[in-house]
Image (cartoon, rainbow, N blue to C red; front, side):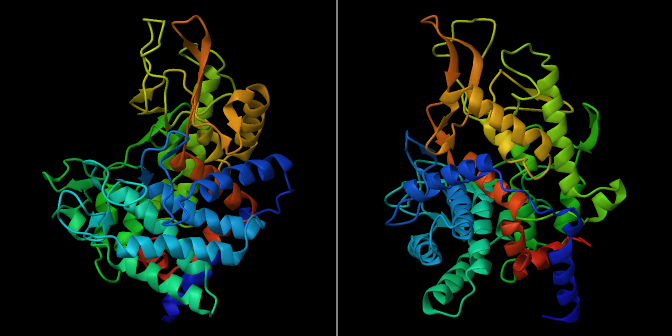
Length: 444
């Protein structure tokens, strides 16, 4: 590592440290963290490491949920839920399975292509589920979890050496440059039946960590200029009293921040705005909170303590007795300039994934919702979503999701840990690929 890289690594380790505080231990956060961790530990397939997309209605595994789970095992070790050796064994099981899965351009019988993995995999075989897409962002979230493990499990013993080697091989196999499809910005995915999908990663969203890993790759890098090409598509607006990069569902302001600490580091775009991406996510959280507090849709339950719009499950219309409201099933609920999707459905992960940004409004809301609505909490923490406004055809009121989703449990677990100890952020600051991606993207 040259002098410039050493200096940048040093600056990364201390960026945001002025904002770090010793958090007083909160029994509520302790229990929420433990219950949410158990989702990944109990439900992860012990023979191949795959994490189900949802529970208890399991249908397939989600590669993004598996990525969150891999990083979550680090939290488990740090908090004493599991031993380091238990975590190493589970991570090794996962990485060995992913490495040996067949890959290729075929429509079936493979798990991925060009180093990318299909969005959903059959839980036992690990092969492509039906005709889902080869997903760039979901592979990105999987690789973020893999790189976190690569940097955390750094001991000089055969198991951890093998773990690091497998992690490195899986990351280096991803052909990020292929996924650009000859464009300045990356494609969202590919199907063997019809090629690249039409949508690209444009506008501010959850793709920061995806671009950083692609730019920092030593094997299949995309041009550093791709970051500037992406930021040119950003939408900066004033909305609900906040000036910020607009994106409606809160998950877009959370996913990359689960892995990368953006406090105190800025690219060219944010230097011109005078803030960093962490502050941007705080503003998005405050706008989401204000919208629900104002409650322009007059939905039941919305208040400063019951809020949170993001992508989540929904009640749908099958049992809806109110023809005046059309309810979504799974959908990208959220609010931003020029964007509004709201049917009265609250997702606890919206507040849970934003704890580091605005703990003063997120933690009280989670506590209140758990205490006030006991149906929304079980042995694995919060259910995915609930809707107090929903009128059933049988005359009952209120919808409570029967499921929990891995991609919504992950941000709760990781962001509590980042808020309390910054553990995932600290681990990723040691990763050379993340460092290189940040440098080449222009972060200083």
